[in-house]
Amino acid sequence: MLSPALEGVFANAAIPQRIVLSVLVAAIPLILLAALLVLRGGPAAAFSRRFIADLRLAGLALGLLVGGLSSFHMGETILRLPFDPSLKQLAPGIFEVSTLVSLGALVSLLAVVAHAAIGGGRVRKADAEPRSSLRPRSTNSGGLRPGSDGRDGPAVDDELGAVNRGGSV
Image (cartoon, rainbow, N blue to C red):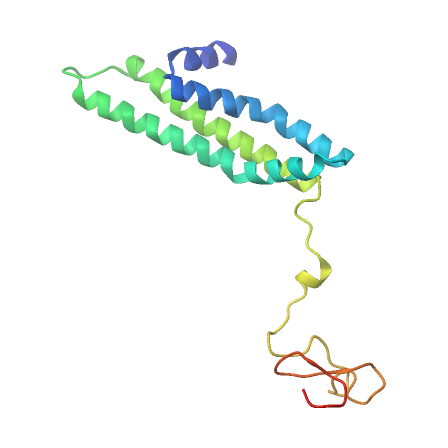
């Protein structure tokens, strides 16, 4: 039921839109292949991880950009026509715009899921801890800085975060 409609969209689209439709359709299996390459490891893993990370935004941006330009061109053409077009005449253009936007969103969503599956969204424990820029990371229950009594290691200077080893900082 859906296939003839998509074939009609591709058949009625201009060459730039056909290229973008082809790229977006091809990106779907490429995301899955890239995720498998990342999980398998090896020399292609870094490139594949970057490919997936970039498609999280690029798929949606490409679909929205080309869909927006297509709808702009369609509106410009409608204004130049000497008659009022019917909805049946406008339907192919509306299908084209919605297909471009939907495919772009699908590619981006698949890239987000693949990125999460390969562990691309991991946050290191040190990055997840809230910290003030001028205060030391931790204090003990007595309010003393670690190392200020000489037992817990070197003392940390409050203002610069430099280590004080007994001499001047």
